[in-house]
Picture 1 (tube, one colour):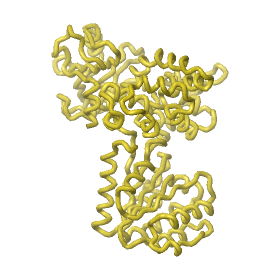
Picture 2 (picture 1 turned 120 degrees about the horizontal axis):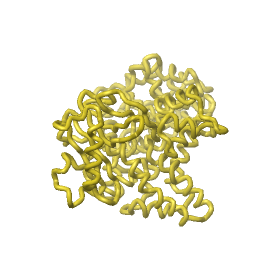
Picture 3 (picture 1 turned 60 degrees about the horizontal axis):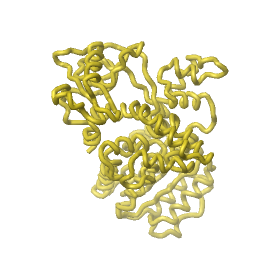
Length: 476
């Protein structure tokens, strides 16, 4: 089952059309986190394209000789060469000779060349990137070839086309994110509220979405999976965790501390420390930068207002990994012990609080994306808090972030079974007055609520009501 990705397929089609029109090569570097569906997307594109293609996947840890031999074997068995017998059996790990052999058997008509997990090829052979650049400039770019370079190591893929690397200026860059909530809603046949929950559970990762029976509610899906310790809802985030952090080192402890609910630098340091001692700032700060800026496994939220604010709050960027670390890892352990009922009771107890916090980034992103806001100058949506976290405001819409020129709306998120009521409105009004940049004459109030407004509140109680329907519509 292939779900969504219409925009991404259209971008790939556009580049293949350019190859057809010009007769010259086009290169694209496609990066995204593990399990986000890069290989599946490109395979679907190749299947639909109607042109010869080669899909070659690198093997982590393989020697240059083995990597070249595998590439040539894939080439020989693909539909790309008109005469497969002209493909040599091997080239002794020599990438320049290998690319010359590839160029010799390319068809005269448009074709697609896919190199999957390019960072592993770079790790194996320090000369690979230079050989690829030379081959592209001299042998491939003058031919009707669409070259797709795929990789899961985000930092290394960014470096592949950086200004100081051989392939600089030769490839477009495309970042592949998870399936969006609208794609999840359509693929699973769920209503808007259930689709938001399903997106939080799966993180939009196709490997989990594909295992979800169409029309099944999120809690029923989790009840069904709670008895299967090998289910994708456990296995996909667990595999991502092991791939990025194979050893239980300090980086892993920091990630697990954030996944367990610690958000501030001080709390993370205390939880991730050892033998009762907090992690020193000199150790923790570089780790947090690496996990946010290079690994992208964590995200840092800063308070948004017209004044600088602290502290920044950390969260696990992928909601499926966040759910696994916060809830499902314990559920998986219960499943391994043959106690699925106990595991599901744990889900039921923790679900409301977990969902209420996990939905915040999704609601903020949907507001940023929406073209229908009554404040067209809003470019960034975040939250606001002071050092005491009293109050902690869920939504701040501004012209820029984190230091805004204008604050255009203040809002509250209530993603519970009860509607947004007069008590919630009064609390929002009190909190809004403390946000730097709030102007009661011009700053609007927004309620983001799973179950809308309480009957006692009139339709004009807030300037904007944001429900699951609006969240999903932002991506449609």
